[in-house]
Image (cartoon, rainbow, N blue to C red; front, side, top):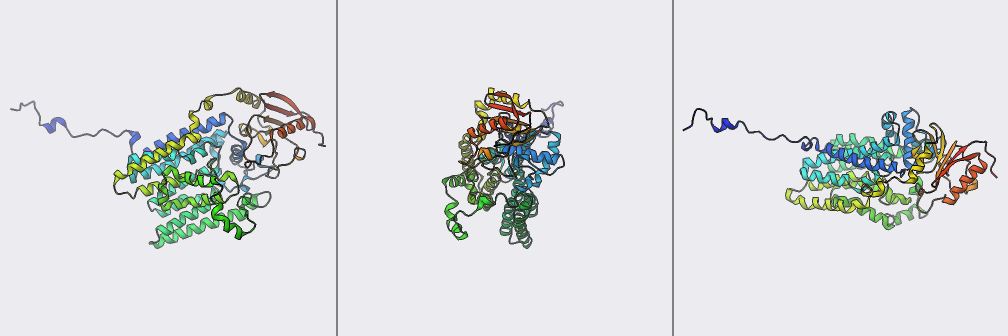
Length: 508
């Protein structure tokens, strides 16, 4: 018998309660957690490289001078590129001004490096959100790891600052909208690409072409796609043919020579194009590596066509830096590759068949990781400060704020937040770097010269075309002391600091 103190089982237990989901596992927060983790990862690499003086005047110093000008409500005139050189005449990137308020609050090259890290990490948010919704939680984690540790993103995060990183989260959001067939939203996210760099109008045109082909059954989607494609093509054409030449000191598009015909005629160039796009073998290797993070599955999605504009101009370029996997050129491709992967896997009706491709993506990520910059975090040299670095910092502190300085490439970004800096020993003239003999170089006019004879100075010159070998640089230093009124302030561990103390004598 049940006593009066006993209660029915349903009353005794009360209503069933489920344990609350931890905040970090909630679907809405998962992408942002990944973005935060990736931002911290990229920032650590970028900031540590700057502390080790591995960043350069070309390009971190250049972009800092531009953003500093915007923050001071001036045109983006960049002394590192030449006297009075407006950086909008080099590449068309007015959206760079969006970083000016941040720089005004924290005037430092680290502002640009952390902002770049955040922009690259933000691109993971729409990709992870889409993967979580379409493929499930495990696949979302794989996409986050695959994109976040991909070599294209790592190479950008660990090489100074570049305007193209503004386009990476915009394109990722556009791709998510394309995957959900929200055509107008996709165009809204892609339209600002025209303000990031002149070639990205071609990517906007590719977005329009994708909408026109995929949504052609709808008259509205077809019209929107065609209008977007036309706007992208016309926008790039206007920037390349009108705006950039108008702002460039020489009155031409500065990078047009990268696509110059190498075979003497248009017909000859077209005849050789199929093979030229794949030779030297560096180009073929890069093509494979672009799609490798998706285990090549991205090639099965029509979204992969959005890589063609960027891959096309890079492979057709005569600049060898554009062909390989270094620098920032592949960052814009990584969101496309992983969006295409999500698109392909989303067609799979049996979730159990997702396991093999996802494991393969993780395996490829793990294999490629040690060969690219994020692996620097595991290297002892990354966390070790040398006597050379301490000597460089001590001599940099000798230069007062507001001074004009001619600096070695790797010392320039250490000064651009507080001084007016030009590059030593090239002294850009009219926005160009000329490979003159030492005696024909324009004489230095800066108050200070600081030169590091131990730092590698290969960038920004093409492989095999460095016009100022170390003996010639040292000859320029001696000439500055002998003829240009500079006196030696200090010399430590291969670093020389000079200060102009008298009027220069005419060069013989």
